[in-house]
Length: 332
Ligand SMILES: [Zn+2]
Image 1 (cartoon, rainbow, N blue to C red):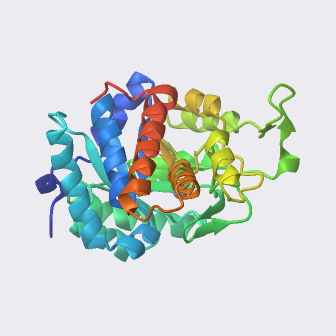
Image 2 (image 1 turned 120 degrees about the vertical axis):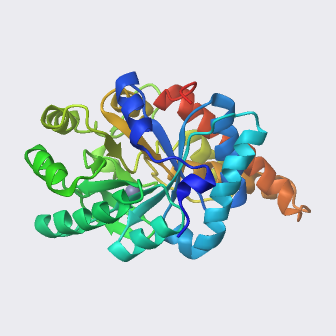
């Protein structure tokens, strides 16, 4: 058993309380490799933003969970080296699919876990989440539960339709499970293809497709039922068109990739939404930079020459999100 406290990590409790009161949201960025982690830590340290490092099941399979944990520990030390005296860094399990997975992460030094029972019948979701909370709270690890189903594909999590969270269920769920935060479904979705073109309308000025707005009435309903309770939004990438354009200009084929407009997320961040998950945007930023270098410099074979620009492009994206979308800069 390794306590996250020994690794210099923090849980989400105080971070979320401050975010709700301050009207901003904490970035939750997924990571799978060193360049991505460097970019996240540099961005957070430079902007003094609290940050949640997320590890999905896919990342654990890809990078190895032992390595990821030591990378997170390294991230804390690296942040200090960058001049961030008291780094506020959470290591969070994204979409934990069983009690055993959550338990193993908690024993491994994670400071926060998500148990995703949203696909289960309501009572089973309650029972599973309760079981994880009972275990996690013994070690002061915070737990995110989920009600409602998001559409889209993220690693092994996928659904072809979404079901909005029902505000009339949230008080019962939070009371019975004791979870510390709640992921809800209000129209965000996983992946880079969040909407079909026929669901969107065309902006007459830019010619870009504009997706339907998020269901803020559902969010308002949840906040009315659970005043001051931390709410989480998954699937909140914006799919920056300029990155998609670079990818497509250099041989990619991402047609009709559409995300959540940033003004919608900005509005959510000012409310009880205090954790916003962003993964696809960083994948796009990385891929765009790699494609551009390899297309322009056909003799290049030093990975540092294309992963370096990829890291810089991700860092730029993270700083933009922190300052212009979440408003979490200067809060740590
Ligand atoms: Zn998710």
